[in-house]
Image (cartoon, rainbow over all chains, first blue to last red; front, side, top):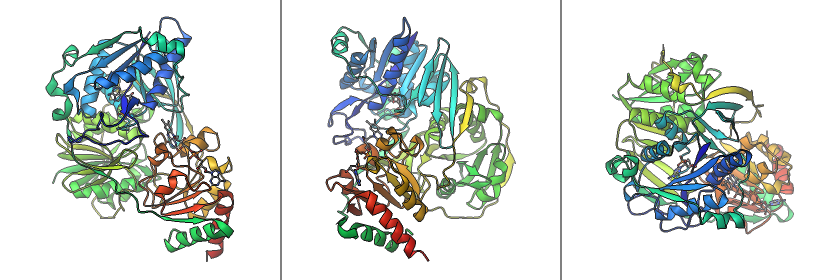
Amino acid sequence: MKIVVLVKYVPDATGERTFAADGTVDREAADGLLSELDEYALEQALLVADAGDGVEVVALTMGPEDATAALKRSLQMGATAGIHVLDDAVHGSDALGTSTVLAAAIARAAPDLVVCGMASTDGSMGVLPAMVAERLGWPAATFGASLEVTATTATIRRDTDSATLTVEVPLPAVVSVTDQSGEARYPSMKGILAAKKKPVTVWSLADLGLAAADVGLAAAWTKVLTTTPRPPKAAGRVVADADGAGATALAEFLTAGHYV
Amino acid sequence: MPQVLVLAEQVAGRPTAPTCELLTFARRLGEPVAVVFGPDGESAGPGLAAYGATRVLWVEDPALEEFLVAPKAEALAQVAASLDLAAVLLTSGAENKEIAGRLAIKLGAGLVTDAVDIAGDGTTRQSVFAGNYTVECSVTHGPAVITVKPNALTAEPSEAAGTVEHVAVTISDAARTARIVSREPKQASGRPGLTEATIVVSGGRGTGGNFSEVEQLADTLGAAVGASRAAVDSGWYPHSYQVGQTGLTVSPQLYIAAGISGAIQHRAGMQTSKAIVVVNKDAEAPIFALADLGVVGDLHTVLPAVTEALRQHAP
Ligand SMILES: Cc1cc2nc3c(=O)[nH]c(=O)nc-3n(C[C@H](O)[C@H](O)[C@H](O)COP(=O)(O)OP(=O)(O)OC[C@H]3O[C@@H](n4cnc5c(N)ncnc54)[C@H](O)[C@@H]3O)c2cc1C
Ligand SMILES: Nc1ncnc2c1ncn2[C@@H]1O[C@H](COP(=O)(O)O)[C@@H](O)[C@H]1O
């Protein structure tokens, strides 16, 4: 069985995240890393590989040169190979462009199963897995709090506000998993050393049969007009709760603000 | 006038608050046409008319309930085909965002998720990077497909015809693949829904596992209860109440954070609240930077004292 895991290289959320002049996320300014939420996807794929023979786990990313760091981390965790879709023309792609590229790359890699994170930690749209499935015409079982894979099916548990659903899809399929699915492993020393010898293939748009005009900033169907940092919040009142002063202040705040 | 398709949600025949908000936004862009799914969708007609729906397109098909997401996107695309469409509006949420993404592909339309405002010219506003930036965006191709966060504005009623029409759709075999094999309903808490509530009281690791003080304050205020991931991971409160990046995003009039430190992933889910109150015994906790009122103290004494004071105050 071949599993492709979609991994995104994102700016570190605990650092300064900003925008470039063209309204795209500035991927140079902040340190980048493999999106934490995609580690959960890798973990689920690696669990399938641990449990059976002949399971290949391929990490696939679309992103700038630096995005290779996301592949490196994936290989260290235990993925067997990496694919990097690298082409200057994909810069600035919106969800429609990104899903076009990823779907084409998946079609070329021809896996039995695609595992994604629930959302990227920068764009946090949570739409790519569904959109990739839509383009491939494959079934999608998304937002899995758990995942079970057999030779012919994938089954997830999905929590909604009102119910817990069990959803089953025939393979090939796209699934996404949440951070409820189970902690991701840390790379072992052995994994870090082994990663150095694992193959990373680079594909351009031409390799995928796509034209530069189909994707990227110019082809995006949404246009960012302005990006404005949130003004720093004026310092609020801070009260120490000595002799019940905090509770009194809080009760007054609630009454004065007509929250009661 | 171009039409704006609104995916309406209803409970017991009443449109939800976020649905009324969508209809209010829709009136800025064109003529609101509501789509409502489900066997009892028809019952929402009068409620949708009261917020400006000129037509209510009622779609019922067992496939909408038997399979995940794909049939709903297909149904919306078929409904949209007969309209002169300016935009499609849906309430932000995991499933609706997926529907929106698929629909954008089907309609050849630009996609915007998690808008907090839509202007009359279609310009949207979003709050990104955990609320640290505001981004304005416009859709340049096809009708705009926009998901809107709850509580982005105050819904305003406006009477319209709201004629209910039963619309038949054909769901393809390709959309019938992600079968929902079981559905276990969750127990309702009896409190307001987290994303719709005007006040949210959340507890974190600082509760030490005892949420009763958080719940009692919430009930005195008619508020929803939320939890940090640390509280959820410890098994103290169900995951469906988690606020933050991998839980729910809330934007209430008032957010009370008790025993929560304010990690970026938590802030991502509550930073756009109109007012924020913090109770934390560590004066250095980063959450204080967001507070309109911060109380440095033990939540186990502060929360019960506030609850008691409010109860005494009540008429
Ligand atoms: C990919 C990813 C996604 C995440 N998603 C989310 C998410 O959606 N939501 C989320 O919340 N977190 C999320 N997190 C986790 C987040 O990083 C923090 O770990 C979490 O928010 C911490 O929860 P907390 O504030 O309750 O706990 P802590 O950080 O341990 O803070 C507890 C606070 O309680 C205070 N305290 C202790 N005792 C008392 C007392 N008696 N009275 C008053 N105050 C007291 C302490 O001073 C401290 O400030 C995510 C993390 C990752 C990596
Ligand atoms: N550029 C990318 N390269 C690889 N995978 C991606 C990329 N963007 C998104 N994904 C995948 O799609 C998921 C959801 O992303 P999003 O819809 O952007 O929130 C992520 O968790 C990844 O698994």
